[in-house]
Structures are given as C-alpha cells and as structure tokens.
Amino acid sequence: GENVEQHPSTLSVQEGDSAVIKCTYSDSASNYFPWYKQELGKRPQLIIDIRSNVGEKKDQRIAVTLNKTAKHFSLHITETQPEDSAVYFCAALASGGSYIPTFGRGTSLIVHP
Amino acid sequence: DADVTQTPRNRITKTGKRIMLECSQTKGHDRMYWYRQDPGLGLRLIYYSFDVKDINKGEISDGYSVSRQAQAKFSLSLESAIPNQTALYFCATSDYRQGGETQYFGPGTRLLVL
Image (spheres, rainbow over the protein chains, first blue to last red):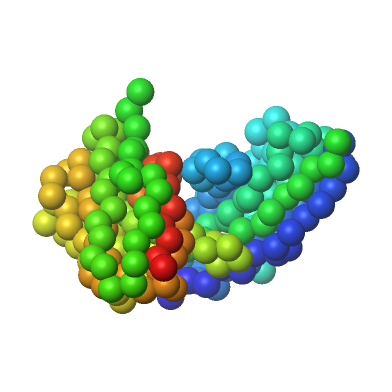
C-alpha cells in the first residue's frame, strides 16, 4: 500500500518568513496530492491540491510543487502570518483507483508575531 | 449550509463498555469514512463506505465496527472500549460525482476511555 512520510513534524517561524513542508510517497500509482489545514480545535480542511500532470500550483501565498520522479511534493507558504499557525497534513491517493487517501503524520506550524 | 455533523462531540467511557459514535451529512455525498487522529500519528483510516451496502476495512479496523444505515448516516462502534482507543475521531465524506478525492470532515468526537 501507499506510505506517506511528512517532515518536519514541527516548524517554528517568524511572521513574514517562508515555511516549507515536505512529503514523500511510495506508490507510483498515486496521482492526486491534497494538503489539509487543521486549526486548533477545528476540523481538517482542504487548502490546496495538485495532480500528477502539473509540476506546481499557486494560490495567493501558498503553493505546492510536485516531483513525480523523486516521488515527493512540498507545501510552500510565503509571508507567513499568525493565522497560518495550524497542523498541516499532506496526503496521496490514486484518483481513478480506490480514492482512499493516505495521510502524512502532520506538521505543526507555529508562526511567531 | 450542507454539512457533516458528529454526535457526541465529547465522550468519556470506561474500559469494556460498548459505545457508538454517529455521523450524519446533508451534503448528499455517497462516500463516508471514519478516521482516528492521535498526536504525531496523523489521520488513520478505520472504515469506509462507498454506498449503503458497501463496507470496507481501513488501516486500523480491529476493535471497531461500522453501520451505514442510510446514505446520510455512518456509525462507528467500539464493541469493548479500551484505553488505547482514546483519541479524536473524525467522520468524513466525499462525492464520487466531483471526483471523490476531496475529504469533507465533521467536527470530530473526542473520546476518553478510562
């Protein structure tokens, strides 16, 4: 089955700095890679995703990059703000297959004012 | 707004007790899931259902059972609760008509087994 590893487990940055979270996956059949944000006490919510036919996708201050050859993808947050503080989960799944996502263990991002 | 709801939101129980966590959704989605979240372990899939008559085991199904009573309802049961089942439980849905990939999570049920 799929195995997703996520690093780092904790990331502390100053407001305005950039943050990068990296994930690797094992199953070459995976072709859809979402990122979920979970604020303290809240439910996880999708913030951005990328498909295997695209190398990069941006949405304002967040971006995701994908390297299919190396089987890794990353979340980039620029100009971090305190409201970016949350736990971020990456996931991988084979769209058109089982549609069952495998999640990484999560990264706790802390943005200091 | 269409939503995913879970009851109860918090539950304290004793070892050996049978408990049920319930999930309802008004999104009209066909697929429903139960996850468990533990600190440092992320979200792990317990069971999932693609339709009313479809039940599938996930990564960590031992000690749990589920029932899909209707398209909108998916219940998780702990037959005989044990302390290491203390965790935050999330129900989620997805919609095959929209590709089935995005998970829409409920608010979570925090369970403590003493």
